[in-house]
Image (tube, each protein chain N blue to C red):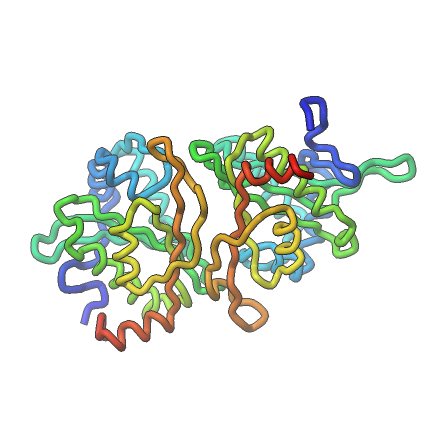
Length: 196
Length: 190
């Protein structure tokens, strides 16, 4: 890693700004998949129209501007000669507390056909480098429902460890589930980069 | 019986101006502020607190704010509030502060917490209540344990104060644990 390496460019995907014209249509389609939303967080699951998603994006950017405590990236596949870049997911750093160097991270791949392609691990790799080497955060947390095994594996592989288990905090699929919080210290991440 | 009333304190509600004046006064005590919140200590003007409280009271589905009043003197000594209430999952976070130092360490906060837990489980019908406590606040930790909260994890090195990193301890109590506790100890008979 050095100063000339691109922060937002991976080998399969890139981190880009929101396209307010084109993205709402695609992101609204993801909300038609309740399974996807259930995997993400505890928010009320409901389908959103492109209009609603557009409003959400606008609110998000307005809040980011006002409180300077979050960064949202639209994740796209890389452009190739035979195909243009395509929106496949998002990455979000939020609840950043600059005084303490702490923040939270979340990411998602919207379309089931785009999962298991290595996109998520590349997003996480780029976002960790961004969080620790550009934003200079000290630590990151991630909230993950205990039934989201792919996310747990992904974050654990990146060095996150379970810190909190809020027992029975989720009511889904007709039963109670724990809501986990995983954490990663920047120092531990840097040490793992040095040995890799 | 009145579910808002205990032996030492009652849960009440104040006009925004009354709350704001108290919050602003308590905010000048940095020991209080640093036990309460991980935001940096900063001046809290009455106006600013008032706006903040009015906004909070506008949205009662996401948060519920109570004042804590001593029964003997009917004095406003602190606040306790639910925030980030998730009705679909039956979870709420709770925060409590006793701004009047003369009332520290005498059971006022613990009783107020027991009263809001009763409210959470017997009126709001929540499944669990969560809270965070700083690793340098053992008095609060003991109080929460007494109220029935269990430690559910530690967010390592969550914040910095006085040049040192401290942990944030997360605690929770489930509805059935609360029920067992009050039936065993006859803590707060309904």
